[in-house]
Length: 139
Image 1 (cartoon, rainbow, N blue to C red):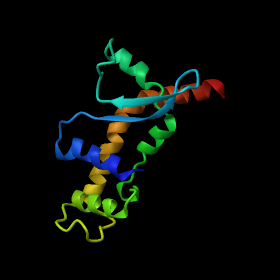
Image 2 (image 1 turned 120 degrees about the horizontal axis):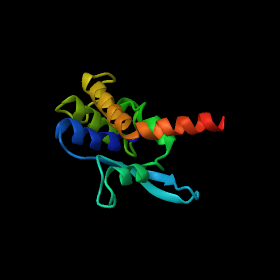
Image 3 (image 1 turned 90 degrees about the vertical axis):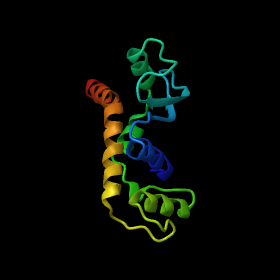
Image 4 (image 1 turned 90 degrees about the horizontal axis):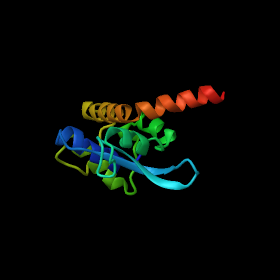
C-alpha cells in the first residue's frame, strides 16, 4: 500500500529488468517474538544451506502481507506526501510533467500491478500453501 515500495520494485523489474529484490517487514518467530523477515530473490549470505535455508528464513513472513501484496493496486497506493505519489504515477506513465494530476488508468499501472503480483506470488506461494494447510488442519 506504500507507493515508494511499489516504485522501487517497478524500477527493479520493469525499468532495469534484471535487478534482484528483497522485501522486508516485521513478523513473529515460533516463540511469538517480533523479528525482521524478508522475501529475497534467491538465497542470501545468511542462508548457509541455500534454498532450504531461504525457505526456513521466509516461513515467518506474515500471511496478511502476502495477501495485500497479491492485491496491490498502484493507483491506490499511499505516500507520506501527495506530491511524491503524483510524481511517481506520472513517471511510471512516462509523463514529462511530473507535477500534473496523474491519470487514474494507464497500461503502465497495469503492468506494474501484474509484475508486482507475479513476483509476490512466486515468492510467497509456499507460505500461502502452508498457511492454508495449517488452517485446514486446525479447523
